[in-house]
Length: 100
Length: 312
Image: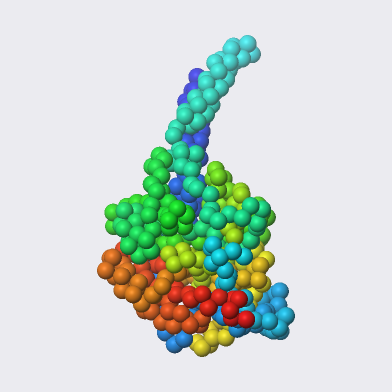
């Protein structure tokens, strides 16, 4: 065995370690492999989703007291519909500066 | 023979130690791009010290390919002004309505020819970020950004829910904003659009402790309301059947006085209409527009009489 050849092994090890540590310092995982910007998230959504199909009464806003509370397990059967027997809450009524 | 071997190993050990020390030293000295400490974002507005409103949407950040264009657009739309923050490679701008921070805008360049979808990121308040992280991951979410601390703001992390909709959570250091009816030009509502609203709602319910309400619908699809503190916080909606392509996501709305006029203004400012103005269930006009880089943003009218205290 020729131990004189081993410094090359240590050189490779050192270079590998350097690359590993450098990559840890420069990147971190993100959405679909994206790289974020430091502590700030900088994720793009998948390109090109559309907004078709919003006609025909499609509404996403808050209600005005309608609706019904569902039970604590919404993923289960709809047996919980009507839980509590009260309508959905809405937005705050008080404006800033109008006091409580 | 033995002594000769030991003598040759000693220099090797010294070389190894030198290499490891050099590697650690060089890596530590390398600049991390856009260090967080270089930028100090303002605390959330209207903090009520000690008040916690887990599940409330409390902050919004736009990731865009064109920060200057976005600032022109949102200034023209909502009267926002901007305070630029620079740190390292990061261009970040705080949007203000008057002196109140309402959003953050981040410039992120893309490669020539690369197509990316700029979007607003929705930040939801949590009391315990680590508990939220554990709960989210245990229920099939992916973590996109591990928890990080921002001075004066708190700790935040970013997830994709089990359907892939991206959202952020924020544990504010000083407390959460008090509940006021937002003024025109401020964010008023957030909607989650997913394939299976009832199932996905369960994920958010366990994360934020929401009460869940079903709403009557005219389209035969599921529409639900998340509520905490006896206030509506967001809606969960089935993606429209004809939505091309099908992509679960969060969409937030800014309160406007006249959604039809603002949708038209968006076009004159270089944006375009995604959903034409229409009457929403509360009786006010609602629309969805895209800013010049393509980020969707909702417009929603809300009269004082639409609010809870008047509806009951």
